[in-house]
Image (cartoon, rainbow, N blue to C red):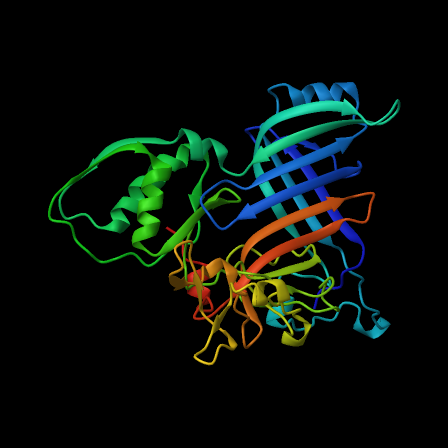
Length: 364
């Protein structure tokens, strides 16, 4: 189990060759959003009190990428003198973490624009907006053909070849349909549109994540369940919502990713309910043969006809086993303030399969 103690923060601004500067010691605020759709993740990062020279370098053409690493250093446990230099076994949960460390990359992307300003006479700032995979998303164009006998795996390989010049590598790969097409095909247009078609055929969604293309099927989870409770970073009570899922707030944990699983104590989920106004306004009730109001799954439309309730008006399902899949993440942080949170929108995992090692390591 990680120990949420002693914040860890790194901010790197790099050029196309991977060289750059570190601004980890400055006051920095950030707001990062990742959605369960094809649109690139975005980040707004504000850095305070840089020198004029550093501001000029960032605003110029010298740097193109930004990487943000956040989490916790943890506290090393007490160790007996007799244990010094003695090897110890690690459990699977401890692999990749050393004595409570829990930090990792939460954003990596291209710098889109910068702007400077001042809060007062002494405190200046530089704001950077960045996107994960924006160049590949907007600029990758394809003009190619495949001969008869091709499969969707061949389409995937062809699209990946177009993305390679933009630094996009293969990430999570779905199980492709086995259909063999008897005629050739021509591809002309933006790669993002063909990726959407390919994902639809695989019943999946796709994103550029940390320089990789992930195509994740709807019933597959990207990682094993991360347990969230008061001891592991859960903040407040998870909130069941109307139609969207369960909203969860926790301390920053880079192990939690889009399409990954989290595990909640069901007793901690605050259940939503319909208001009395909704119930007694006639929207969710109907009169029986005796004239009494009873709950209904239908409402009357403008013509007075009974129609099904819109799905968005129903409380979202709650997982009976406490396992949820993450569909949206918003990171907010302030290296000199209190904010150091993740806000998650999740839904009941349902039939989502836990990933095997071969799935997690599957590469093109």
